[in-house]
Structures are given as C-alpha cells and as structure tokens.
Amino acid sequence: MEGCLFVLNKRNRILAAEAMSVHSSLFQCPVCSSMMRVEDLRQLVCLKGHSFDIAKQGYVHFLPRPAPSKYGQALFRSRSILSQSGFFESLDRLITDQILTHIENQSVRLLDMGCGEGSHLARILDMMHTEGCTQAAGVGLDIAKEGVRMAASRQPHLLWCVADLARSPLASNRFDFILNILSPTNYAECHRLLRNNGFLIKVIPDNEHLQELRAAFRSSSEPHSGAKLEARFQDNFELVKSLPLCTRLKLDASLIPHAIAMTPLSWHADTRSIQSLQELSSLELTLNVTILIGRKYRQ
Image 1: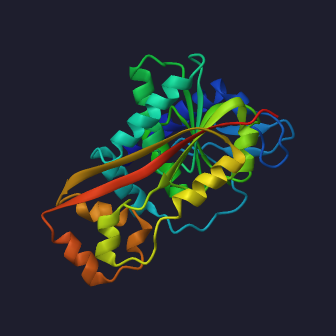
Image 2: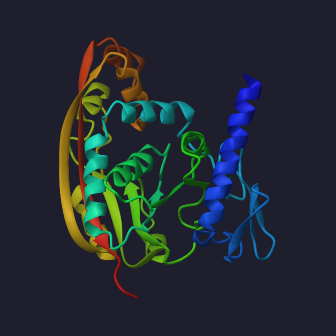
C-alpha cells in the first residue's frame, strides 16, 4: 500500500507541476513580486531565486511559516462528504449559471479565495466543462493547509495554494472571476487580481442558514448581517445582481455527524446537544444564502 501511495503522490506532483507550467503567468513571487516558472517539475522559482516546493499531494505552500488554524482535517473531510451528498449542489449550479452568463470567451480564469477542501471549485469547473466551457483554468487558495492538501490530492490538475489571502502569490489583473464562498473577503486583493470588468462572486449567509444546528446548539452566534455585508460589497464593487437561495435537504443518519463536524457552530456546543442530534434518524438542514455578483470598477 505504501508503494501505491508513493506512486499516486508522485503522479499528483507531476500533474500539478504540468498544470502550473501551463499557467505559470498566473503566479508571482509573494516575497518580491517577480514572475515565476516551474523547474524540474518540482518547484516554483521566481526571477530572483525564491523557490517554493510542489508538495507530493500537488499543491504549493507559499506561507513563510505555518499558520495556526482551527479548521482541521476532520472538518474538511465532513464538509467534503456533505458536498458529495448534494447539499451544496444548488448553490454551485446557480454560481455556474451566472459565470456562463458573463463569460466573454472560452479561456476563463477562475480563482476561489478561501477554497477550503476545494469541492465548490471542482464542481463548478465540472459543470462549466459539461456546458462546453472546456478551457477554464481553476486556482484554489486558502490559508488552511489541511483543506488545500485534501483538494490537491483529489484534483491535482487544478492549481492549489496555501497562502495568505491578503498577500496572494498570484499576478495582478489575471482573473475573470473570483469566488468567495462563506468566507471573509479581502477586497483590495480581489481588485488587484481581477482584470478590468472582472467579477467577484461572494456568497453570504442569511438568517435561516443552518438554523436547525443553531437551534439544537442554542447558539448565540448569528450570521453576520446580510445588509451590512451587502453594503460593504457595494462600497467596493459595482453590484450587478443579488440572488437569494434557500433550500432544505433531508440528511439521513449517516450524514448528521458530518453536518455537525463541518461547521464551527459545534465547537462550543455541549456534549448532550451533539449527542441528541446524532441520535436522530434524519435531519432537514437549511441552506440559506445570498449570492452577490459584482463587477470590478475600472481603474
């Protein structure tokens, strides 16, 4: 088994290196901002000699030192399982439809800032490919190493980076779309990375989002005010469209522990509340979000 794993990981690194070679113009050194290239299918190297290894799973770690994160492997595994169950499919479908509405050519460059374990980016690109958009390049970026590692191990042909969202290792004015799904936004960096007339697609939680878990955990943590988040969005981007989405998916007993584990809502929940949920034979869980689509203001 160890030999098989080595072969898989070696292949992942080669696939990732080949993809990074094709799209090397998307990268810039996070230390000196100079251009980068792939050397020996093993590392990204900038013009001034700063180098970053391509991990065997197929991602590049650009942070100068490890970044502490509460988002661990168990959370990302559970989020991936919920995604595979179809919980986020309607959201990914709606985002894909909006991207296809606004693309100008087949060579689309798509960045997911705060990509987690990569399920949104991978599914959206698959849906785009099914609709005939076969030349889209996808980049996933997150500060949480465990999520990016999981994403790369499953989709090594995409470009995965462990990096600071405020100082990304990506070149300016390169991306047609940036996704920012249920995570904080660095608007200045989004402006730098998007080409003129590029689009930021931000997903924000609404009041009923995961309400069943909030009720069970008696959580005092409420979603950030949608009105405030939308107002800040409009301070930075020209709002093109605001799309509400509310769906409920019935989870069977095997999915309930993963619904609990995929969200920080459970971090401060008492053991009895968690156990009561886990003993249910099924659970209806609400996905309630708004998709904000904004165009970059011309500079």
